[in-house]
Image (cartoon, rainbow, N blue to C red):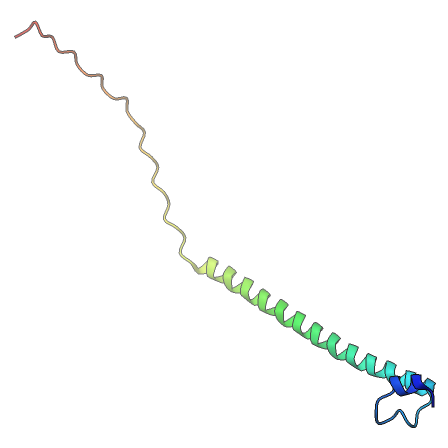
Length: 92
């Protein structure tokens, strides 16, 4: 038996597999692992995206139902200050 087959095949199958079958077994294992992690990643991405959308909609709804701030009073127009009267010290 080839040493490469002993290294590539799983422990239960390596005795009965030739090199081509061992390579096929290796690729099928890689495919299963890739599929598993891809599905987990896609599912996680969708859940995170859904949670962010729900949070945005909740904030938007809270902003719409919140009471609007009271309107600001316009500042009063300042009248010119009266000039101080001059005091005549000669008059008594």
